[in-house]
Figure 1: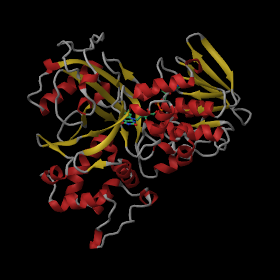
Figure 2 (figure 1 turned 180 degrees about the vertical axis):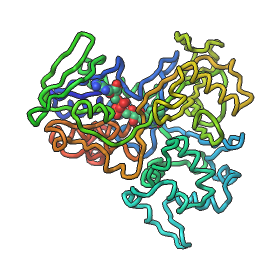
Figure 3 (figure 1 turned 180 degrees about the horizontal axis):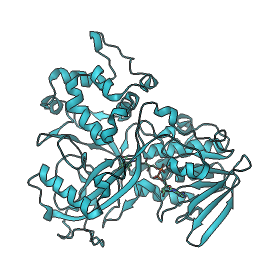
Figure 4 (figure 1 turned 45 degrees about the horizontal axis):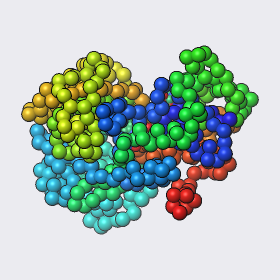
Amino acid sequence: MIGVVGGGIAGLAAAYRLQQRGRDVRVFEAGDQVGGLAATYETAGDPIEKFYHHLSKSEQTIVDLAEDLGLGEAVEWRIGENAYYVDGTVHPMDKPWEILAFPHLSVYDKFRLAMLTLDVDVRGGVPSFDTYERLEDFEDVRAVDFIREHTTERVYRNFFEPLLDAKFGERKDEVSAAWLLGRIKFRGERDILKGEILGYFEGGFGRLLDALLEAVGRETVTTGARVQDLDVSGGAVSSMTVETAAGTETHDVDGVVVATMPHVLEALTGYACDIDFQGTVCSVISMDEPLTDTYWLNVADEAPFGALIEHTNFVPPERYGGRESSDSRAHQNSESSEDGEHLLYAVSYVQDTDDPLWQQDDDGVEETWLEGIEDLFPAFDRESVNWIETARNPRTAPVYERGYLDMVVPYDLSEEVADGVYYAGMASRAQYPERSLNGGVVAGFECADRIAGAGAFDPEADRVASPSDD
Ligand SMILES: Cc1cc2nc3c(=O)[nH]c(=O)nc-3n(C[C@H](O)[C@H](O)[C@H](O)COP(=O)(O)OP(=O)(O)OC[C@H]3O[C@@H](n4cnc5c(N)ncnc54)[C@H](O)[C@@H]3O)c2cc1C
């Protein structure tokens, strides 16, 4: 039997693929629900992710998986509109004329920014089309220095710096230019006249997780089961110790996929990973009225959140609605509105648990968000808030520092730990340059294919072989 530690998307994907390859698998999930960071809240309509989620157009493996699971029709590609809140004003940033109208950059600044996003180096007046080709060349360059050198000081100050602040806080100076360039490439497709094309599942990502769970078999997955130890004493993993409400169990295994954050891998095997992770505090705020008409609002002005993400400007509000929260913290000011609920994420990344926001209880966090929204949008009426739910997790995103790729945890840990130990968590290569659900699926497949002796996972070969392509 192959034991999988963790029932997030990576663990479930590994289990699915291992079964496809004829292996006997069991998944052990410490929490009482599968899904990990992609877990959801119920509404009277579709479930909503506790942390905002969408797909980028460049992510194919998760779409192929959805097709294999019979959910191909559920993948929706929608426009996710972006805007920038600067000096008290919301500036839409999708259409060419909106970008041209953005007053905080000159025409020349915008030209330099556009050239960077199009992969053209115009320094010295002679365009070069391959300068940014090899991301490895920029691993040791600081993103902040790179932006200043390859665009203009104003592009850095008025465009990138607030985004880096929101994403990495005081750690922004450590982030590599390779990450920035990879991220620009990763963003995928835009509709030139409308904006960025992003993916979502009809019914939410919970639907994909449910389908994956069904396919793997509910009996294969044990929740409330924390893996406490792996026996690797003989140079190969031979058993795993699992703590459940009923007591401690030991299971013999032929191999193990650790599909968790790397500190769990370290606790189980002693393998230490130097990647630092930041945490997230994120609330879903249900409102009777929309707050803005954009999906993704980056906030450059002083505010307790780096971004406000209005989910129901991406997915229609009619899909949600009318949930009476049983949570005593929830605001229950109003009845459900007829056109469903407007759902807004307020989110902030925290660098450590000493962060004042992290220190606040959920009531405090929710009050902080509401005050912040009132400061930015004086017309906002908190009476329109139906309920708020808050999620937090101390490890949600790697800090993509210089030298990051050297710190990535290999899929196959036979040399570093013991034969039969594999790693599919967020510190794996598939989660670079951005951690994602697709990255989790790829990491799970990478481990499964290695265990099954099929070598590294090859998405292209997989596509050709996929029955859904028939
Ligand atoms: C704020 C935020 C926004 C995001 N936005 C997007 C987005 O827009 N698009 C996108 O694709 N992705 C997004 N992501 C990232 C995405 O959620 C993750 O990349 C993905 O869910 C990681 O899956 P995973 O299975 O690797 O890890 P996790 O989801 O962390 O799952 C690991 C599981 O292991 C369990 N576990 C831990 N220790 C043990 C143990 N000892 N024994 C048993 N079980 C254990 C945990 O309980 C957890 O369920 C976002 C994440 C956050 C936090």
